[in-house]
Image 1: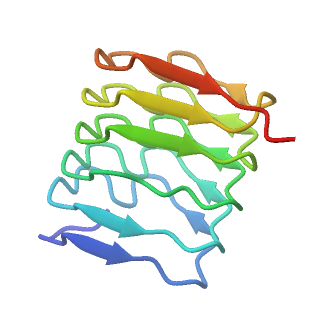
Image 2: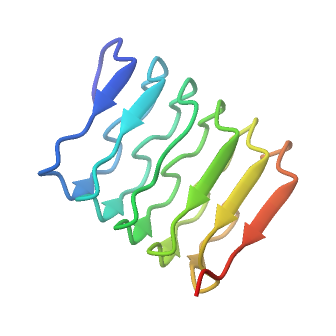
Amino acid sequence: PIIGQFKYIKILSSITVIESNSFEDLNCLIQIEIPLSVTEIKSFAFSGCSSLRSINIPQNVTVIGDNAFSKCTSFTEVIIPESVHKIGAYAFCGCLKITQLLLESRNTQLGENIILDCPQLDNLTFKNTK
């Protein structure tokens, strides 16, 4: 994991996978830029990034791992692109301020309890973009 007081991180375009625990508990992180080259976000990659306000998941991501964004308590809205075919268990668990989660594909395989402990979530939308 990265240790430090980083508020903004831009991931290099040569990166294709965000590995497990890469940014876990980096609670000072406010914004991260993920390039189109990324195809997978592994387990616990951003778990505990409590200051991260939003995440722009690129169109080429196909898998979001278990607990990838759990305890990102500052999220308010997340859009899952149509390219994502699997979301792991507890992926957004404990995102206390999230009010809206939009899945752009009806064919996404959902792990168990992906939205457990999201008390503000009042809009879960499945959108078929085809």
